[in-house]
Image (cartoon, rainbow, N blue to C red; front, side, top):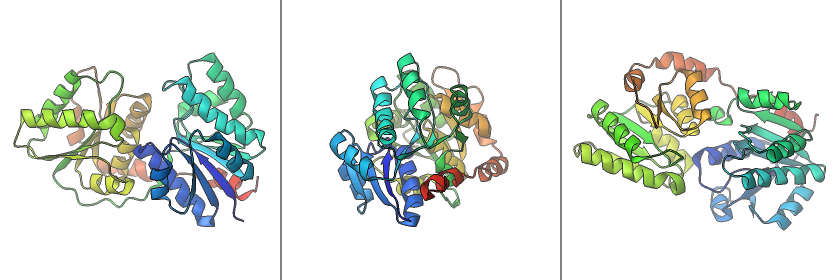
Length: 340
């Protein structure tokens, strides 16, 4: 039976990871021809991707209330929506959408989220109180699972939904893909050291530089490309920005090596069979690198033997771990189909 479903998340900001999660959700839900509504910061952009789906602007609460009222199910996620590191306002916004669903007696699904960090006591109280009333809560990492267990909230531990994306590895070209973003602690010294390491270790390679979210990534990527050109004008560089999800995946899939900051870029590297090095700017990146035995460099510290490690990676062992990462839809399906 077709359901009316509202999707809430960090959608419309042209962030590769969140847009890829939305794509996974839409593809899954449309298998049964459910009627979807997406809450997005950029209705025109989202509508250009999903012309057949209704969209509502992020703070259009009148229409959000109406859509949730007419719906059967509200889905919140995935990604790291429920945290107050970005801002307390952001946490309260996503909790408010969830609360609307609960208040209107709709089934509410928390979809493969990373919970926290939530530093404020008020934020913790709100999150705990609201999540306890949801129909189904799933998280993408062990730390979130343990936190909710401490709070007395039942949750299911799943892998990130991007692991469900089907990518057929290609024959690799002599290319190094570098994906950078701005963040707290980003500085010119780090970019100088990274450019120097790339030029020394990959002087005979093409360097493809990827901006996944132009508002955050693009200026850093441009600066890095300039530093590469100054160090070695002979190295061929190409800067990619404003790509669709499929264009990002198709281009990345050609690379032999990937040096990446963003969590979901690393997952695409793993799925594509690329030798990958992570840049540790967030705990989620650190955990992912440790899980798959990837080398990791830090913005503040010396790189050590990370570049030697990436060259000697055992892709067979990594691929076996990736193959075992199957996203479990069973709990999700149970709520969607109404067999709860």
